[in-house]
Image 1 (cartoon, rainbow, N blue to C red):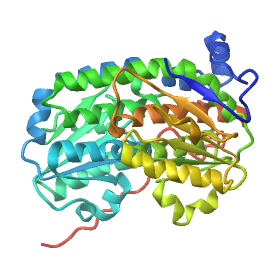
Image 2 (image 1 turned 180 degrees about the vertical axis):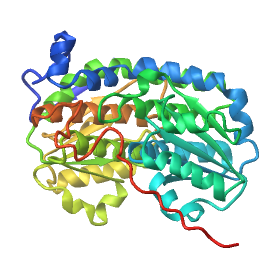
Image 3 (image 1 turned 60 degrees about the horizontal axis):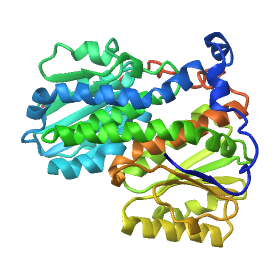
Length: 406
């Protein structure tokens, strides 16, 4: 059972929005208060991860030829989908043994093949929730036209989206659609994000299906315990008087930090300023963000060497009395890392996880924290951008293609 230890502000008293109370409301009331979809999609993650794992395992015979013999790998998507690629880039690079890069869909539209590694043959994995944003089809179309030695895999949560339907019968593109439940109805990506991450992770374990299945099962069990234990703790943290949030992570977990910062921005309509940084990068200027109204969320590495660097930085923040307080998330967290205003959230399991395994758990912390802060700010989690500044699917815009003469 994950241990949730709190000290400092918000450590006593009832959570302002308890999970049981939220779930006890009828569907009609949940929809009226605007949190029905987001809450359901956050809570469904442990079960949907198992489904996504089996879907990927069923496609092993189709996926293996895509990976065989490649000399470069590109993960692409836009917004959260790009950050999903960042969560798996390192583990795929080391598992497959080829240069791997995460490139935003927008960078492919503007820079084409100049934005990706030059080695061929290559594999481009397009990640998308809906697959209906302008970049989704545009980036694949451009690469198909200009880079014939690139292979293509689409992982999407929407089997009816343009990305899936356009290329479903194209022999140059392999399309895998995840369970329709993962096609989040909320404005923000939650279960779609983590399912895309775990689906892409399968590419590095095609020869080890039992290991992949066991990993997804372990993560699912941890998340099942983390969600009910973490909700009241994170609700109390979300109710504290911060106006800024800084998410810290290293390696694959920096991808989770980027996604968590985006969740906070989206779900508070930008009212709470959120950014992400690496621990060692923080000293090179961004530490100036850490004012007395800043919550610092620390995704603590499981690697002893990396953790040593991270712990030094956490202690430096405490010594300099920077920030309103810290939320530290991980496993076997040294108690002396916590100051009087800090909160520790432990997520333990049967076997130790590597840093490459943690991003989906880190992101749950970011999702729940943003969910409760959204409600505190008076917004509806399902549609926090009430003025329509951002939408669930990016609106269409012109795609430009300059024809070159051979």
